[in-house]
Image 1: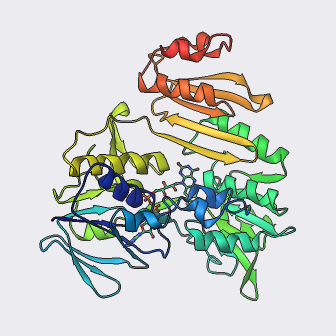
Image 2: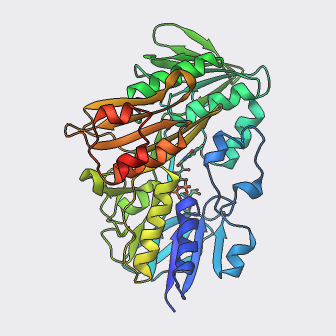
Image 3: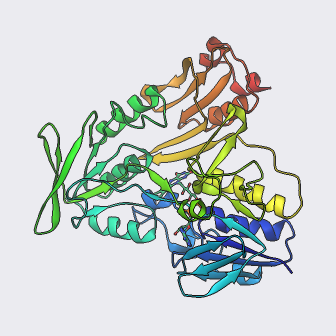
Length: 406
Ligand code: FAD
């Protein structure tokens, strides 16, 4: 029987293995993963796990027995090193070779490194996997001083968790506002206020010059304007780089990620790619892009498994994402490309609202909700339907959103 090898045992790879069995794949499935863990969820690493509120079991994507029960072979602690497309053969870090009939690349992304002096000092950390999270948790004792370089979601979440652990936290952002690349200005401003009100210092428009150390350990972050921010732990959270080098060297089409279609097929008919390592079509927005989210990893895992099992492709989903910071639950759906107008529904001062982004024709492009799950769900439907809604109706909390989506 034909064998599928899945390279990368993260959220996308682990989900693909499960969907393949669910959709009736009878052949072999081998899941090759560099990390020692079976597939697990990363979102808690900056949230519940960091605060000591999650266990290894609660992190796991499936219970340990699942893989044996489903006849999914796990090759963990093993890196894919060579991809030979002509021979349909892989070479792994343990020296073994592995043939495949179909290959799914689910290699994820890695933290972007900080190209500045002091980045190699002890106490300078990044966050992607459980090993990183354990090191960060050990450092964030009460009284510790954390500096986060990069005001993205991971940086803000870790800053919030650090405060909960009794550590001090400073977020240093190069742009004029946090989340500049991924959120609207209203949400950025709200989060800056929320963090400051809860004891996180936020410095925007700040260029880091170096991390200064003493005896090999980080002591401060030095900004270009001469400001020195004392810190014993520095989290570098300046984005992630897709792991696409193996695919590129093997000659697969690559852009911002490994280029795939809506069935997760690459430019080689025997090879699929899913998750953070891909550049995928965004059908609602008439363009392609890279999404870094659990819902995307699961959607693309479904696309690949469906195609491999001869099923029709699942209907495209609205991209969405969530983040938890303090007692704030953020839920975002859609992408605000070409947005012309924003409408706030609800009460920002009461920490419960949704921001809608509309295009020139008043179509709902995206929604960003804070502690407003009902408006988020209805908003996501408006995005999916590319509904045109008058801003006054959106703003009017007496009009239930689900009536507008109907
Ligand atoms: P990964 O889960 O990274 O899996 C890729 C795997 O491939 C890794 O285990 C890697 O070690 C392995 N690998 C890489 N190269 C090789 C190789 N050559 N050989 C073998 N194995 C290899 N998303 C949300 O939607 N909501 C959130 O709140 C959220 N919070 C997050 C918090 C943190 C701290 C992080 C790091 C991410 C968060 N994300 C969140 C993003 C989400 O976790 C990712 O989008 C998701 O994990 C992507 O799945 P993936 O399988 O593509 O990549």
